[in-house]
Length: 383
Image 1 (cartoon, one colour):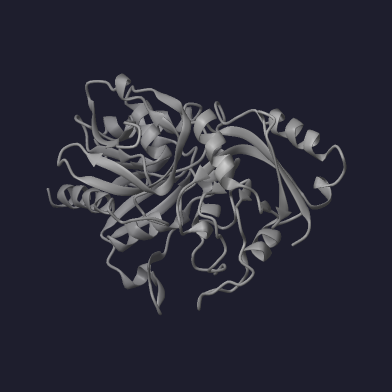
Image 2 (image 1 turned 90 degrees about the vertical axis):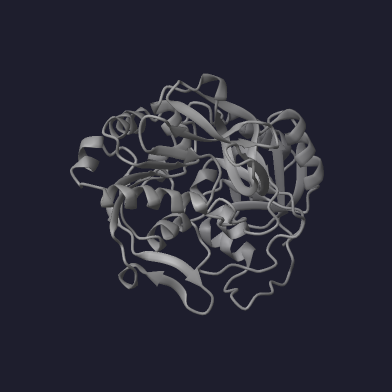
Protein backbone atom coordinates (compact mmCIF):
# COMPACT_ATOMS: atom_id res chain seq x y z
CA UNK A 1 0.00 0.00 0.00
CA UNK A 2 3.03 2.30 -0.21
CA UNK A 3 3.56 2.21 -3.96
CA UNK A 4 3.15 5.68 -5.45
CA UNK A 5 0.57 6.58 -8.09
CA UNK A 6 -0.14 9.71 -10.10
CA UNK A 7 -3.34 10.83 -11.79
CA UNK A 8 -3.00 13.59 -14.39
CA UNK A 9 -5.62 15.37 -16.47
CA UNK A 10 -5.15 16.79 -19.93
CA UNK A 11 -5.53 20.31 -18.50
CA UNK A 12 -2.32 19.78 -16.49
CA UNK A 13 -3.90 19.00 -13.13
CA UNK A 14 -1.92 16.43 -11.14
CA UNK A 15 -3.00 14.29 -8.17
CA UNK A 16 -0.52 12.19 -6.19
CA UNK A 17 -1.62 9.17 -4.18
CA UNK A 18 -0.93 5.49 -3.64
CA UNK A 19 -1.38 2.56 -5.99
CA UNK A 20 -4.23 0.16 -5.17
CA UNK A 21 -4.00 -2.09 -8.20
CA UNK A 22 -1.48 -3.36 -10.70
CA UNK A 23 1.72 -1.56 -11.56
CA UNK A 24 1.65 0.17 -14.91
CA UNK A 25 -0.18 2.95 -16.67
CA UNK A 26 -3.53 3.63 -18.29
CA UNK A 27 -5.34 6.45 -20.04
CA UNK A 28 -8.93 7.27 -20.86
CA UNK A 29 -11.77 9.69 -20.24
CA UNK A 30 -12.02 10.56 -16.54
CA UNK A 31 -15.59 10.64 -15.19
CA UNK A 32 -17.13 10.70 -11.72
CA UNK A 33 -19.82 8.36 -10.41
CA UNK A 34 -21.95 9.38 -7.42
CA UNK A 35 -23.24 5.91 -6.45
CA UNK A 36 -22.63 5.00 -2.81
CA UNK A 37 -22.64 1.25 -3.45
CA UNK A 38 -21.95 -1.15 -6.30
CA UNK A 39 -18.29 -0.52 -7.05
CA UNK A 40 -17.88 -4.10 -8.28
CA UNK A 41 -20.77 -3.78 -10.74
CA UNK A 42 -19.43 -0.41 -11.90
CA UNK A 43 -15.93 -1.74 -12.54
CA UNK A 44 -17.25 -4.67 -14.58
CA UNK A 45 -19.77 -2.62 -16.60
CA UNK A 46 -18.60 -2.75 -20.26
CA UNK A 47 -20.03 0.74 -20.77
CA UNK A 48 -16.97 2.04 -18.86
CA UNK A 49 -14.48 0.79 -21.45
CA UNK A 50 -11.75 3.44 -22.00
CA UNK A 51 -12.99 5.42 -19.00
CA UNK A 52 -11.23 6.08 -15.69
CA UNK A 53 -13.90 6.04 -12.99
CA UNK A 54 -13.76 8.35 -9.98
CA UNK A 55 -16.07 7.27 -7.17
CA UNK A 56 -17.25 10.24 -5.11
CA UNK A 57 -18.23 8.16 -2.08
CA UNK A 58 -15.13 8.35 0.17
CA UNK A 59 -14.81 4.72 1.36
CA UNK A 60 -14.63 2.14 -1.41
CA UNK A 61 -13.87 -1.54 -0.83
CA UNK A 62 -15.81 -1.94 2.43
CA UNK A 63 -17.59 -5.12 1.33
CA UNK A 64 -14.79 -6.71 -0.68
CA UNK A 65 -15.31 -8.65 -3.91
CA UNK A 66 -17.36 -11.78 -4.61
CA UNK A 67 -17.84 -13.95 -7.69
CA UNK A 68 -21.59 -13.30 -8.01
CA UNK A 69 -21.76 -9.52 -8.34
CA UNK A 70 -19.88 -9.07 -11.61
CA UNK A 71 -21.69 -7.59 -14.62
CA UNK A 72 -19.26 -9.02 -17.19
CA UNK A 73 -16.36 -11.45 -17.30
CA UNK A 74 -13.72 -8.86 -16.38
CA UNK A 75 -13.02 -5.33 -15.15
CA UNK A 76 -13.84 -3.07 -18.09
CA UNK A 77 -13.05 0.36 -16.63
CA UNK A 78 -9.64 1.69 -17.66
CA UNK A 79 -8.78 2.62 -14.07
CA UNK A 80 -10.21 3.42 -10.64
CA UNK A 81 -9.85 6.59 -8.56
CA UNK A 82 -10.98 6.68 -4.91
CA UNK A 83 -10.41 8.62 -1.70
CA UNK A 84 -9.88 5.81 0.80
CA UNK A 85 -9.49 2.03 0.65
CA UNK A 86 -10.44 0.43 3.99
CA UNK A 87 -7.92 -2.11 5.23
CA UNK A 88 -10.71 -4.49 6.27
CA UNK A 89 -13.63 -5.66 4.13
CA UNK A 90 -16.74 -6.69 6.06
CA UNK A 91 -19.29 -8.90 4.32
CA UNK A 92 -20.25 -12.55 4.67
CA UNK A 93 -20.13 -12.74 0.84
CA UNK A 94 -16.64 -11.26 0.50
CA UNK A 95 -14.07 -13.53 -1.17
CA UNK A 96 -11.31 -11.10 -2.08
CA UNK A 97 -10.09 -7.59 -1.25
CA UNK A 98 -10.63 -4.85 -3.82
CA UNK A 99 -6.92 -4.12 -4.29
CA UNK A 100 -6.16 -7.83 -4.77
CA UNK A 101 -8.95 -8.01 -7.35
CA UNK A 102 -7.57 -5.07 -9.31
CA UNK A 103 -4.09 -6.60 -9.34
CA UNK A 104 -5.47 -9.95 -10.47
CA UNK A 105 -7.30 -8.19 -13.29
CA UNK A 106 -4.23 -6.18 -14.29
CA UNK A 107 -6.01 -2.88 -13.67
CA UNK A 108 -4.43 0.22 -12.14
CA UNK A 109 -6.01 2.30 -9.43
CA UNK A 110 -5.15 5.25 -7.23
CA UNK A 111 -6.28 6.12 -3.69
CA UNK A 112 -5.59 8.83 -1.11
CA UNK A 113 -6.33 11.75 -3.41
CA UNK A 114 -8.78 14.62 -2.96
CA UNK A 115 -11.69 13.25 -4.97
CA UNK A 116 -13.77 16.32 -4.04
CA UNK A 117 -11.31 18.59 -5.84
CA UNK A 118 -11.21 16.23 -8.81
CA UNK A 119 -15.00 16.04 -9.00
CA UNK A 120 -15.28 19.83 -8.95
CA UNK A 121 -12.80 20.05 -11.83
CA UNK A 122 -14.75 17.51 -13.87
CA UNK A 123 -18.07 19.14 -13.00
CA UNK A 124 -16.88 22.60 -14.02
CA UNK A 125 -14.78 21.69 -17.06
CA UNK A 126 -16.52 18.51 -18.17
CA UNK A 127 -15.17 14.98 -18.47
CA UNK A 128 -11.48 15.16 -19.33
CA UNK A 129 -8.90 12.84 -20.80
CA UNK A 130 -6.57 11.58 -18.11
CA UNK A 131 -3.93 9.03 -17.19
CA UNK A 132 -2.80 7.04 -14.16
CA UNK A 133 0.78 5.94 -13.55
CA UNK A 134 1.13 3.38 -10.74
CA UNK A 135 4.01 1.69 -8.97
CA UNK A 136 7.36 1.85 -10.75
CA UNK A 137 5.74 3.78 -13.61
CA UNK A 138 5.00 6.62 -11.16
CA UNK A 139 8.58 6.95 -9.97
CA UNK A 140 11.08 9.50 -11.21
CA UNK A 141 11.22 13.28 -11.29
CA UNK A 142 9.49 13.37 -14.68
CA UNK A 143 6.54 11.14 -13.67
CA UNK A 144 4.02 14.00 -13.58
CA UNK A 145 5.11 15.25 -17.00
CA UNK A 146 4.83 11.73 -18.44
CA UNK A 147 1.36 11.34 -16.96
CA UNK A 148 0.18 14.64 -18.46
CA UNK A 149 1.62 13.69 -21.85
CA UNK A 150 -0.15 10.31 -21.73
CA UNK A 151 -3.42 12.01 -20.84
CA UNK A 152 -3.12 14.39 -23.78
CA UNK A 153 -2.35 11.54 -26.17
CA UNK A 154 -5.72 9.88 -25.52
CA UNK A 155 -7.92 10.77 -28.54
CA UNK A 156 -11.22 10.97 -26.65
CA UNK A 157 -14.39 8.90 -27.00
CA UNK A 158 -16.00 10.98 -29.74
CA UNK A 159 -15.95 8.89 -32.89
CA UNK A 160 -14.85 5.68 -31.09
CA UNK A 161 -16.75 2.53 -32.02
CA UNK A 162 -16.16 0.44 -28.89
CA UNK A 163 -19.17 -1.87 -29.16
CA UNK A 164 -17.18 -4.12 -31.50
CA UNK A 165 -14.44 -4.48 -28.86
CA UNK A 166 -16.62 -5.66 -25.98
CA UNK A 167 -19.16 -7.68 -27.96
CA UNK A 168 -19.24 -11.45 -27.99
CA UNK A 169 -17.57 -12.91 -31.07
CA UNK A 170 -20.03 -15.78 -31.45
CA UNK A 171 -23.69 -16.52 -30.93
CA UNK A 172 -24.56 -17.63 -27.37
CA UNK A 173 -27.52 -18.86 -25.38
CA UNK A 174 -28.15 -17.31 -21.96
CA UNK A 175 -29.18 -19.58 -19.07
CA UNK A 176 -29.27 -17.46 -15.89
CA UNK A 177 -32.12 -15.76 -14.05
CA UNK A 178 -32.16 -13.36 -11.11
CA UNK A 179 -30.36 -13.71 -7.78
CA UNK A 180 -31.93 -14.77 -4.48
CA UNK A 181 -30.16 -14.56 -1.13
CA UNK A 182 -29.00 -18.00 -0.07
CA UNK A 183 -29.85 -19.58 -3.42
CA UNK A 184 -27.78 -17.63 -5.92
CA UNK A 185 -28.94 -17.20 -9.52
CA UNK A 186 -31.84 -19.19 -10.91
CA UNK A 187 -31.34 -21.29 -14.03
CA UNK A 188 -33.33 -20.88 -17.22
CA UNK A 189 -34.43 -24.54 -17.17
CA UNK A 190 -36.28 -23.75 -13.94
CA UNK A 191 -38.32 -21.03 -15.66
CA UNK A 192 -41.03 -20.88 -18.31
CA UNK A 193 -39.58 -19.12 -21.37
CA UNK A 194 -42.36 -18.65 -23.92
CA UNK A 195 -40.72 -15.79 -25.84
CA UNK A 196 -37.62 -15.96 -28.00
CA UNK A 197 -35.63 -12.71 -27.89
CA UNK A 198 -32.43 -11.99 -29.80
CA UNK A 199 -30.17 -9.74 -27.71
CA UNK A 200 -27.53 -7.65 -29.46
CA UNK A 201 -24.39 -7.58 -27.33
CA UNK A 202 -22.93 -4.08 -27.55
CA UNK A 203 -21.48 -4.54 -24.05
CA UNK A 204 -24.44 -5.87 -22.12
CA UNK A 205 -24.54 -6.18 -18.35
CA UNK A 206 -25.43 -9.60 -17.03
CA UNK A 207 -28.30 -8.40 -14.87
CA UNK A 208 -30.14 -7.02 -17.89
CA UNK A 209 -30.10 -10.51 -19.37
CA UNK A 210 -31.13 -12.03 -16.04
CA UNK A 211 -34.17 -9.74 -15.78
CA UNK A 212 -35.30 -10.59 -19.30
CA UNK A 213 -34.89 -14.31 -18.60
CA UNK A 214 -36.79 -14.05 -15.31
CA UNK A 215 -39.72 -12.55 -17.24
CA UNK A 216 -39.97 -15.41 -19.70
CA UNK A 217 -37.49 -14.56 -22.44
CA UNK A 218 -35.35 -17.28 -24.00
CA UNK A 219 -32.29 -15.29 -25.01
CA UNK A 220 -30.02 -15.75 -27.98
CA UNK A 221 -27.09 -13.33 -27.70
CA UNK A 222 -25.52 -12.24 -30.98
CA UNK A 223 -22.42 -10.19 -31.85
CA UNK A 224 -22.79 -6.45 -32.39
CA UNK A 225 -22.24 -6.70 -36.15
CA UNK A 226 -24.87 -9.38 -36.76
CA UNK A 227 -27.01 -8.47 -39.78
CA UNK A 228 -30.77 -8.08 -39.65
CA UNK A 229 -31.13 -11.00 -42.05
CA UNK A 230 -29.23 -13.31 -39.70
CA UNK A 231 -31.43 -12.27 -36.77
CA UNK A 232 -34.68 -12.63 -38.73
CA UNK A 233 -33.61 -16.14 -39.73
CA UNK A 234 -33.73 -17.04 -36.03
CA UNK A 235 -37.45 -16.15 -36.03
CA UNK A 236 -37.40 -14.10 -32.80
CA UNK A 237 -40.46 -12.69 -31.06
CA UNK A 238 -38.49 -9.51 -30.31
CA UNK A 239 -35.07 -7.86 -30.37
CA UNK A 240 -33.17 -6.36 -27.44
CA UNK A 241 -30.49 -3.68 -27.94
CA UNK A 242 -27.98 -3.70 -25.08
CA UNK A 243 -25.99 -1.01 -23.35
CA UNK A 244 -22.37 -0.48 -24.34
CA UNK A 245 -19.43 1.94 -24.51
CA UNK A 246 -18.31 4.58 -26.96
CA UNK A 247 -19.93 6.80 -29.57
CA UNK A 248 -23.14 5.42 -31.14
CA UNK A 249 -22.73 7.23 -34.48
CA UNK A 250 -19.98 4.98 -35.92
CA UNK A 251 -22.12 1.86 -35.28
CA UNK A 252 -23.67 1.92 -38.75
CA UNK A 253 -23.92 -1.89 -38.80
CA UNK A 254 -26.33 -1.77 -35.84
CA UNK A 255 -28.23 1.28 -37.08
CA UNK A 256 -28.92 -0.42 -40.42
CA UNK A 257 -30.14 -3.59 -38.73
CA UNK A 258 -32.49 -1.67 -36.41
CA UNK A 259 -34.05 0.09 -39.39
CA UNK A 260 -35.00 -3.30 -40.82
CA UNK A 261 -36.53 -4.49 -37.53
CA UNK A 262 -38.65 -1.34 -37.31
CA UNK A 263 -39.78 -1.74 -40.92
CA UNK A 264 -40.81 -5.32 -40.12
CA UNK A 265 -42.73 -4.08 -37.02
CA UNK A 266 -40.70 -6.41 -34.78
CA UNK A 267 -40.80 -5.47 -31.07
CA UNK A 268 -37.57 -3.69 -30.09
CA UNK A 269 -36.35 -2.65 -26.61
CA UNK A 270 -33.14 -0.64 -26.21
CA UNK A 271 -31.10 0.40 -23.18
CA UNK A 272 -28.34 3.05 -23.00
CA UNK A 273 -26.30 2.64 -26.21
CA UNK A 274 -29.24 0.65 -27.53
CA UNK A 275 -31.44 3.68 -26.86
CA UNK A 276 -29.12 5.95 -28.80
CA UNK A 277 -28.91 3.47 -31.68
CA UNK A 278 -32.72 3.22 -31.92
CA UNK A 279 -32.83 7.03 -32.00
CA UNK A 280 -30.26 7.20 -34.80
CA UNK A 281 -32.02 4.45 -36.76
CA UNK A 282 -35.24 6.45 -36.48
CA UNK A 283 -33.69 9.66 -37.87
CA UNK A 284 -32.68 11.53 -34.70
CA UNK A 285 -29.18 12.71 -33.82
CA UNK A 286 -26.92 12.16 -30.80
CA UNK A 287 -24.53 14.51 -28.99
CA UNK A 288 -21.49 14.15 -26.71
CA UNK A 289 -22.39 15.37 -23.22
CA UNK A 290 -20.21 17.71 -21.17
CA UNK A 291 -20.20 15.53 -18.03
CA UNK A 292 -22.38 12.60 -18.87
CA UNK A 293 -24.54 10.88 -16.29
CA UNK A 294 -22.90 8.42 -13.88
CA UNK A 295 -24.60 7.46 -10.64
CA UNK A 296 -27.48 5.67 -8.95
CA UNK A 297 -29.53 8.64 -7.76
CA UNK A 298 -30.67 10.42 -10.94
CA UNK A 299 -34.28 11.68 -11.02
CA UNK A 300 -36.11 11.06 -14.29
CA UNK A 301 -39.58 12.32 -15.27
CA UNK A 302 -42.04 9.90 -16.86
CA UNK A 303 -43.61 12.42 -19.22
CA UNK A 304 -46.89 10.52 -19.66
CA UNK A 305 -47.65 9.84 -15.99
CA UNK A 306 -45.86 12.80 -14.39
CA UNK A 307 -44.12 10.47 -11.94
CA UNK A 308 -40.52 11.07 -10.88
CA UNK A 309 -38.37 7.94 -10.88
CA UNK A 310 -34.92 7.54 -9.30
CA UNK A 311 -32.59 5.80 -11.70
CA UNK A 312 -29.13 4.37 -12.30
CA UNK A 313 -27.19 6.10 -15.10
CA UNK A 314 -23.96 5.61 -17.03
CA UNK A 315 -23.58 7.38 -20.37
CA UNK A 316 -21.59 10.15 -22.02
CA UNK A 317 -23.72 10.54 -25.16
CA UNK A 318 -27.39 11.46 -25.45
CA UNK A 319 -30.16 11.69 -28.03
CA UNK A 320 -30.81 15.28 -29.04
CA UNK A 321 -34.52 15.84 -28.35
CA UNK A 322 -34.60 18.75 -30.80
CA UNK A 323 -33.91 16.35 -33.67
CA UNK A 324 -36.69 13.81 -33.03
CA UNK A 325 -38.60 12.97 -36.22
CA UNK A 326 -42.41 12.79 -36.29
CA UNK A 327 -42.46 9.04 -35.67
CA UNK A 328 -40.34 9.22 -32.50
CA UNK A 329 -41.71 10.74 -29.31
CA UNK A 330 -40.09 11.56 -25.96
CA UNK A 331 -41.19 9.43 -22.98
CA UNK A 332 -38.67 10.29 -20.23
CA UNK A 333 -36.55 13.32 -19.37
CA UNK A 334 -33.73 13.90 -16.89
CA UNK A 335 -34.57 16.28 -14.05
CA UNK A 336 -30.87 17.01 -13.55
CA UNK A 337 -30.23 18.68 -16.90
CA UNK A 338 -33.34 18.15 -19.04
CA UNK A 339 -31.71 15.71 -21.44
CA UNK A 340 -33.80 13.07 -23.16
CA UNK A 341 -34.02 9.75 -21.32
CA UNK A 342 -36.55 7.71 -23.24
CA UNK A 343 -38.23 7.45 -26.64
CA UNK A 344 -40.79 5.30 -28.40
CA UNK A 345 -41.71 4.86 -32.01
CA UNK A 346 -45.28 5.77 -32.97
CA UNK A 347 -45.30 3.58 -36.07
CA UNK A 348 -43.94 0.30 -34.66
CA UNK A 349 -43.53 -1.46 -31.27
CA UNK A 350 -40.08 -0.06 -30.44
CA UNK A 351 -39.01 1.89 -27.35
CA UNK A 352 -35.87 2.60 -25.35
CA UNK A 353 -34.47 4.10 -22.16
CA UNK A 354 -31.17 5.90 -21.61
CA UNK A 355 -30.46 4.82 -18.03
CA UNK A 356 -29.75 1.36 -16.62
CA UNK A 357 -33.12 -0.03 -15.46
CA UNK A 358 -31.60 -3.34 -14.32
CA UNK A 359 -30.50 -1.62 -11.08
CA UNK A 360 -27.02 -3.13 -10.75
CA UNK A 361 -26.26 -1.06 -8.82
CA UNK A 362 -29.14 1.28 -8.16
CA UNK A 363 -32.87 1.64 -7.53
CA UNK A 364 -35.48 -0.52 -9.22
CA UNK A 365 -37.94 2.21 -10.23
CA UNK A 366 -37.43 1.53 -13.95
CA UNK A 367 -37.85 -2.27 -13.78
CA UNK A 368 -41.39 -2.00 -15.26
CA UNK A 369 -39.75 -1.26 -18.62
CA UNK A 370 -38.89 -4.96 -18.81
CA UNK A 371 -42.52 -5.80 -17.99
CA UNK A 372 -43.65 -3.51 -20.78
CA UNK A 373 -41.43 -5.25 -23.33
CA UNK A 374 -42.66 -8.70 -22.29
CA UNK A 375 -46.28 -7.46 -22.39
CA UNK A 376 -45.74 -6.43 -26.02
CA UNK A 377 -44.34 -9.88 -26.79
CA UNK A 378 -47.30 -11.55 -25.07
CA UNK A 379 -49.86 -9.40 -26.92
CA UNK A 380 -48.35 -10.27 -30.27
CA UNK A 381 -48.15 -13.96 -29.39
CA UNK A 382 -51.84 -14.01 -28.48
CA UNK A 383 -52.99 -11.92 -31.44
